Structures are given as C-alpha cells and as structure tokens.
Length: 119
Image (tube, rainbow, N blue to C red):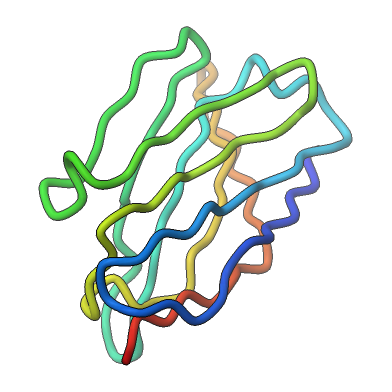
C-alpha cells in the first residue's frame, strides 16, 4: 500500500514556473514507476510524465522541453518542475505510483493539486 500526497499547485501567470511535489509513504518507493497525470474540466486524464524505477523518463509531446520529472527514493518524493507554463497547462495534477506484476498491476493515486495558468 502506498499513500501519496501532492503539493505545490497554485495560480501562475503564463510563462511562469511551478514545482509540484509528491510525497509517498507506506511502501518502498523505489520499486514503483512514478507518473504525473493531469485532468482539465471536461477532458480525460492525461499522462504528462513518467520516471521508471531505473530513472528513465518520458514526457507527453505537449510538455517536452518545459517539464522535468525527478525522484528521490531516499526521501520518498517525486517532483515535477514546470517551466514556461501555458494556459492549456491548467488542470488538476495527480501523482501516480505504478507497478506491474505477473497477473496484474498496482496503481495508487494522490488526491490531486490544482494548477491554474492565467493572467
């Protein structure tokens, strides 16, 4: 079982930056692939960034070059540095811990943090 708590959301002007943090407890974070998703009103949840247990990263095309995901297994944290923010980045951002095992998978979610990009 993994408990995830996001923080760092808020209101920022276009072109600005925010750093989201996800703090995990309850299990060994290092065995999970960690992901950030986002969901804007009226849309489906979208995968934004992934960092595997080995440290490999992947990003949605819409955020490549602007967002950076990182993890610190010792501290149990995953961060999402968001730069050059655009109004279309406005959404609730969710932290996800994912692990695939034979016969199934585990997924844990945080409660989400609101990011609003507006003048």
